[in-house]
Amino acid sequence: MFNKYDVLETINMVEKEHLDIRTITMGISLLPCVAGSADETAKKVYDRICSRAENLVKVAESLSMEYGIPIVNKRVSVTPASIICAPFAAQSAKIGKALDDAARTLGIDFLGGYSALVHKGMADYEKTFIETIPEVLATTEKLCSSINIGSSKSGINMDAVRLMGEIVKQTAELTKSRDGFGCAKLVVFCNAVEDNPFMAGAFHGVGESGTVVNVGVSGPGVVQHAIESIPEANLTELAEMIKRTAFKITRAGQLVAREAARRLGAEFGIVDLSLAPTPARGDSVAQILEEMGLERVGTHGTTACLAMLNDAVKKGGVMASSRVGGLSGAFIPVSEDIGMIEAAEKGGLCIDKLEAMTAVCSVGLDMIAIPGDTPASTISAIIADEAAIGMINNKTTAVRVIPAPGKGVGDCVNFGGLLGRAPIMPVHGESSAKFIARGGLIPAPIHSNKN
Image 1 (tube, rainbow, N blue to C red):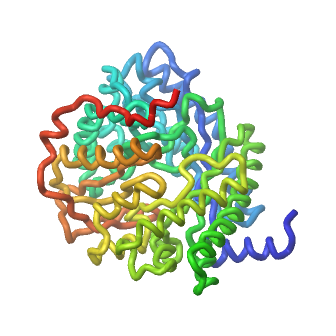
Image 2 (image 1 turned 45 degrees about the vertical axis):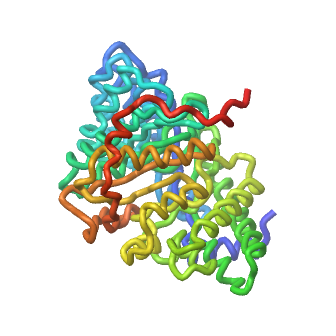
């Protein structure tokens, strides 16, 4: 039961502390759409998405009005498209166009799932599919792509890692008029999850039901305010406060998720409690860490603070709902967090430190702009390093880097909206090309053998 204090507290969270439902994402299986040709399949894909998600935006807007909680994004995720495109991989762009057309017809923000799962091996049709990604992302507006190149069970597919370094470079070049914006819609995963509602890495896993509603809740400002209210607390007390706050946020998300699923005639999937920042001041994960006692994020102690925050958020969420899933934790996308942006601009936050932080938080190196002349092999090496953290620690990690064509350290890219702006961060100049050229498979760690 909610009492008047719970109601007043929630209103305050929304009005003053940036509490929102960051996304309602409908997952749709496209397996029934495979037909005899790319054109037939594309038509079936378009029709199925438009019919299943026809009321997604309307329902989200009505729930936002009724509950008084902003629902920022309305999104769709679909079965990894490489599976749908297998019979005609060279024509995969036709499916990509159909997906983007459906997203524009529905009026949603993004559609995820132009994806492939190649963590153990890469079939010829999957390689052909992946090679279409740069053109597809350059010629579509709302479509997002992700590739899973490793897992704790299978190891890291270094042939796929090498290819993805080249794909990122090509995508940046084809969207150079927008500072490589296509790369902001492309994620490379290790241990990708099937129920992630957040873009650009969302896809509808083959183990999921036909139509599912997943909700992503975000409240960095709420957590920051809670910490501010106990300035003299020790770290044990801070962790307890974060857990209680995460519990309340998750409850709000579950309420919206269940009702959204009912109205849309879909299954309720999961609530992803992720502290996903925006460029707005007061809605920053970096500022939470600074409120915990750091002069600026990136200094010594940052990784420890982030580890405690991430763990407390997960514990509070799991207490609030039996359907917590996705990536739940704290995100650290540089361009989308005002505290991260400022720390990077002042030189206090570098890629090496961000990599260390990804060992204890959700996902990985996210929305980081790097010099446009960065070699593809260096990008592949960055992906390999991040995948190794995920593989060894049995967690999801990812890389979304943007080599900005024609720009270097000291410059900045600005994508606007939730994607924010990003100072160009330096990468190491020494070559990793010989390592990447070896290819093959980095074997799974011994602790993966649990049968």
